[in-house]
Image (tube, rainbow, N blue to C red; front, top):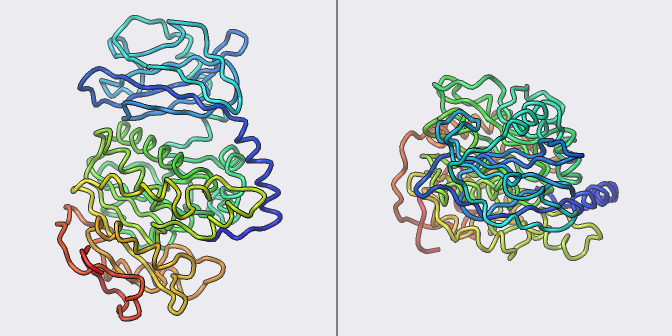
Length: 439
C-alpha cells in the first residue's frame, strides 16, 4: 500500500472527484414484514420525460437505514422482498413503490434526499413499466452494466493490470464506468465447490492474487474476486461488498465461503462481514487477512492535511478516523474463523509498506483465532519490493499453513500470547500464535 503523491495522479483525481461530488445521496429507512429474513431488492428508476430508466438495482439483507448514490434527476423507488427466491418481483411479495404514492422524487446533485420510511407490505401494484425498463436497461445502462455479479473473465483481462489498479485509486468514478466493479469469476459457478472471495487493497486488482489462485485446490474451492475502485470511501466499498455477497448468496444458495483479503481489503472485508451479521444474513465463514493496516496508514493522514486533492479513501485510512476507530466495535461471530497474517521486512518496523504496529493492533489480535508471521508474505509485489517468487512464497504459505485456505469448521477461540510490534525480531518465519491477553 502506498499513498505517495504524484502530480499526474492528483490532476486526474481532481476532475474525477469533482464528478463524485456532484452525485446525490438518496437515504431512507427500510421496514420489511416482521420476522422476515429474505433478501430485499431495491431499484432506483430515473424518470426522463415520463419514461422510466433503471439506474440502480441492488440486493440487501439490511433492515433499517439505507443509502444510494445517483446523478441528479427525478426518480421512482421500487423495493420488494424476494420471499420465493426467484430473483424477481412476484405477486404476493411485500413491496414498496414511490410511484404508487406520490410523484417521482426530485433529487439535487451534491445533496442528500431522504425518501423517508420504505415500508414494505403485500399489495397489488402495477409494475409492468418498471419490469420493461429493468429488462431493457440491464444490458444497456452503464450504471447497471458496470456492476458485475459473477461475470466470467480471465485474470489476464486488461482491467486486472497494475495500471488499472492505479486508475481505481486516482479516478474511482471513471474506473468504475470504464472497467466495472463487483464480483468476478474466472470460470462458471460450481455449486460443489466453496467460494473463495479475494479482496485486494489500495491500487490493487484481482490480478494481484494470481499466485494464490494458482496454489488453490481447484477440486474443493472456486476463486471469486471482489474488484472495487480503491480510491473511494472504504465505508461505501464495505457496503458494496455486503450487498454483493447478499445477492450472490440469494442467487447461488451456497452454505459457507472464505474471504482472503490483502492490506486495506482486510478493512473493507471486516466491516462488510460485520454488516452482514448485524442483519442476520451471516453464514459460516473463514476469514484470512494479509498485512492489513488495522490502525490505519500514517501517510493517508498526511495526505488529508497537506495534499491539494484528497482521495476519499485517505479519509477512512487515516489513523484515528471514525472508520478505523470503530473497526472492532462489533466482534465477528464465533462461526467466523479469522486468521491474521502479517509480514515484516526487518529493520524499519514494517512489512515494506504497513507498520507492524498497525498490523498488530491489539483488538485485531484479540478477535482473531490465531496470528501467523511470515516474512514478506503478500499476494502482491509492490514496485518498491519485488523480491523472490510470488508463487514460491504463496505456495510455501499454503503448504505450511494449509488450514488457512481449507478450514471446514470454526476454530476454538482460546487465549495465549499476544504479539507486539517490538517482538517480531525473535519470531521465526512461519511461527504462529493464538490470540492473547497480554503483550
